[in-house]
Amino acid sequence: MTKKFVHSDKSAKGQRDKNEFLIPDIFTKTSRLIGIDSGREYDYGLICYTGVDLDANVVFEKVTALKKISILRHRGTKKLLTNYLERIKNIRISKSVAIDESFNLVEIKITAANKT
Image 1 (cartoon, rainbow, N blue to C red):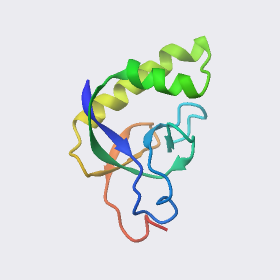
Image 2: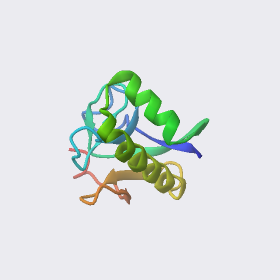
Image 3: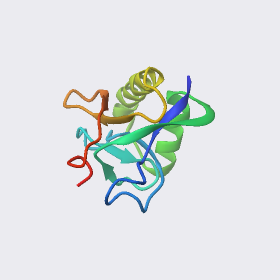
Image 4: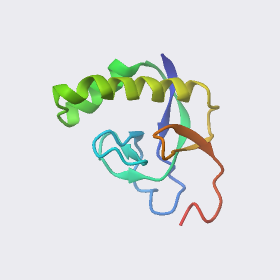
C-alpha cells in the first residue's frame, strides 16, 4: 500500500485543462499513462501525495467502475497495478514519471522539449 500516486501535470502544455490520477494504459498496452476518469493519454505525470492508502484492489475497483475489464485480463491487470504501485512507493513526491517500453514506471527529467 502507498499514499502516493501519479497525477497529471497541470503545468504541461496541452495537459493543463484536466486534473486526474494516471495509470498505465492497461487497455491498449501502449507505453503511455492514461487518466483513470477520462482515459486521456499522457506522456508523463507527477508523483503526488493522496493522503489515502491505495493498493491494487482499490485502483482496480475505480478503473472497473468506469470501464469493463474481461475476466481473462483481470489477473494480469491486477498484477500490473501492483507492480505500478510498488514502483510509485520508491519515487519521491513531485518527481516526473513516464512509462517505458517495458511497461515500467520510470523517473524522467522534464525539459522544454518534453512539454511540447
